[in-house]
Image (cartoon, rainbow, N blue to C red; front, top):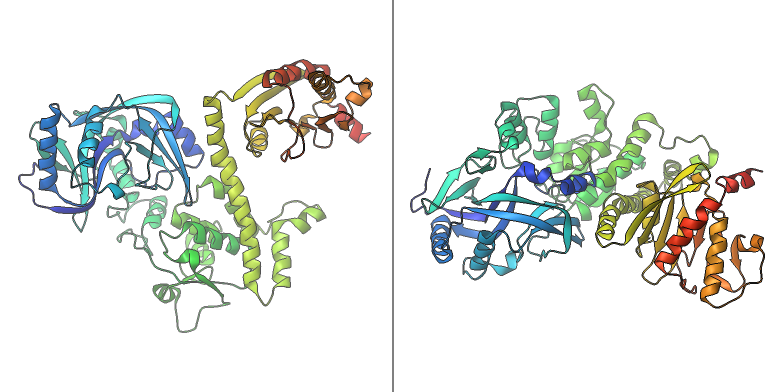
Length: 581
């Protein structure tokens, strides 16, 4: 109903434009980011562009300010059309954050309101971001500047409605602005986006009883239903603390000590790593918590009592004991690491996918290392953990620190491969620093790519993720390396020969060598720029560390042309046959 002279005070509130959720989530760019592991920070079906954040405000005062703004603007402010044509990325200690930016020639109402409130006494500059944007996912640095950094590959437009959302000390309320009445009208906080009376496809879907239940169980600000399937309750369990019926909201519990068995296992090490690095919102203090090693709980304490005292247990009873969980479910399907990941809502994080698979396989199947090769088993991480437990039997903290450090290296590499490198590659494509072309050697069709970047991990990513057979990577210094999929056994000898001849011509050097020497591995006299590594099947102009090696004098186009001309002259599989002979 409309609000007349409402004197309610709200805190932790914002004014902005509500965007159509299904339209945003359906964008190709957003879908690509979701697949790369960039998730919404708040798991509710809404997207909005914030005009102003207020630590606290009186709704009547805000209404009066909007009336004044509308009079000065001379136009309606209830709706604003956004043309999103740019995006930006912020890397900080908590992870990678992605946002979309509107064209400054669009959303005139939103830009006008932003400017008005930026000069208003109601506005706290230190707590507001100066740039209009829509958050796509990742940990939001909130008041940090979020300027348009790069053009969006797939720009799109949408109409949005002016809303206010605030907490009255007990619950959140949502209001829409009515131009006709020049005031706010309260609507249900979970009401789907509606543009001028036309319900979006998602909105119609949200109106069904099943969808409403799902939305409720995924909304941390709403009381969740106790009914529903086992999967529904499992989802609710991520948002509620220590309950199965979803009757209580999430309450972070401060932790000063983590307790676990002294014999470190793949599962417990993974569980501890995930808890420490992803659990601070649920368990403040866990990142700095002390670790104690127990074989059982103290006789006079339960896991729940210990938890209330700041102790969190792993596989010693309580919510993170997978033995209890599997007995209750009647299925041997969870380990401690997977229980913790589910509780924290990170079980689908791409950076943890392999870690969780390994932890489950090691714990539930006893197959941390699948290979029967004795060297693989000796140097596999599960074998190393056993060695560490024997070596540091009296100091399990050393074993835990060793293993979690190795896990950390793996997760960082997964973040590079699953998130950072795909996004960097997209940016390089936009900047025209990527060229894809096809080659043929004998009867084999080959996919080749030129890429200009200083990131030494890019070639490995392109081989693994993009399945590129031959990559020409050129650094900004001019150093150029050519790497291949070793399994394809591409014959690089003709290419090595023409690169050396062309380099000599650029240097005004006349080479007095035969064809066999030009195609030989290693370096040849007077042409230190090119090293042919037949073991890795690559041709390097400095490799990953070009210090001491001069960059080639050949241009990008010249190198690409030589690759196009020389690769068809080789005989694919020659290197493999030579090694096997």
